[in-house]
Length: 252
Image (cartoon, rainbow, N blue to C red; front, side, top):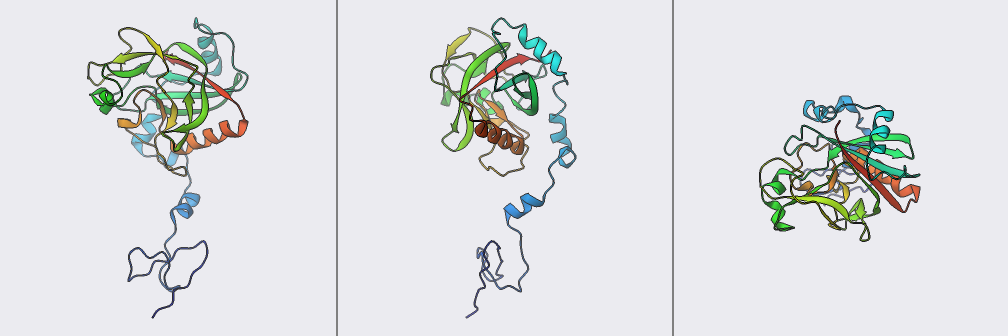
């Protein structure tokens, strides 16, 4: 009988058993996923060509341009003192693509920018919305401030996220024509439909930059860059901030 040498924190692959996590110390060593993730350098240059395109879909703005624009909205009251989200919905609105941007501010100080979507994915627009609502997919109304709309919690009971508060309705449309475009058409509705701010993977240490929306948004604000998303959620959690504001505007 071959004795297996157990070394804490390391994984050895034993050639006679495909799923054995311990093996003879002379066998080749295979790094664990966590070790690979720690070694991999994550930056813009490491992204694929398709992933890099995501970062250039919404035009670049200066802080002054963005802050001046959101002050022009009728629903503007004041700039939040803590962290808040300024979402910019792309004019192009390419079907099933993460082509929107989310600027994170603390007061009037810029913190970081994330890529994602404020629109439902193609599978939802094409009829998947019927799982949630018979009329149509939820599309959040743009050019509006939603003060203290979110609080820190879990999306689908497992992903750290900002959840819509029960006391804070959001303005939205129902897109039920089942084409590939997400449209702000018809009657504006107001309600609590749990359009949360969340990521596009449940793996917390993932480096995935997701390309297609699909079912990852049924009307929520979804971030496709996993590392930046979880880094941002850690920032939000560590701040101890109780509520979070979002302002959603159209690209201008």
